[in-house]
Length: 266
Image (cartoon, rainbow, N blue to C red):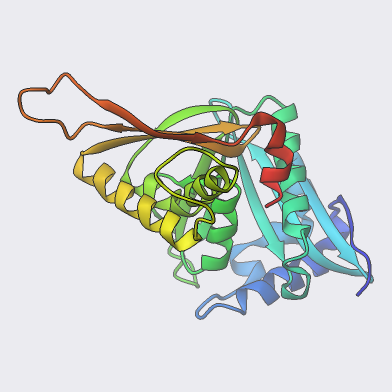
């Protein structure tokens, strides 16, 4: 397989971008790519994002475009990641991480405080990747009324900081929080589990937590550092009727900051 070079995207990459997106969409039923009718900006995508003060990257191998990503500023310090695609033959080797790193690094350097993206509800593989990168389900769905009958799901994360998760976010965070719990137990943390902790057991714990968040019995907080989901703490607010003022702190785990680079690459 030819080596991959990631570079700035150009308007002259139009045919390659269109072929890449078409190949990715063809993996899912009902996805229709009609460039001239619905996405004419693909004919000059670098200019399109440049006019929005954004940036575009292309991954090239053997003269073909095998990956792409873009990022544009929004409002209130948010930046939106978009046009994130990698051809199937180049998945699983780190290219998607490299592309998203380019977009996130650019946004952070420009002062982004929050990162957002939208993804077709059919793109379940992409959703798992975004959640691995610390993005969580955010906000209502977006119905595009296009030829593909697209229903977009929103994902978002802070660059740095702590947020209280609602039920949808808690469910979206289940996989990554389970990995944090597993890493802490395997490193010798004194919690309710013994190493080696099976990931299914850890996920089962956070699945129950998400249900408790939805029922109002628990409050779940998560913390990000440099865009990576690094830690969590939980408050048990399912207290007796005579103790409405009281909450118990529990299940507090985090990845050491010195390990952030390794953790992001997992």
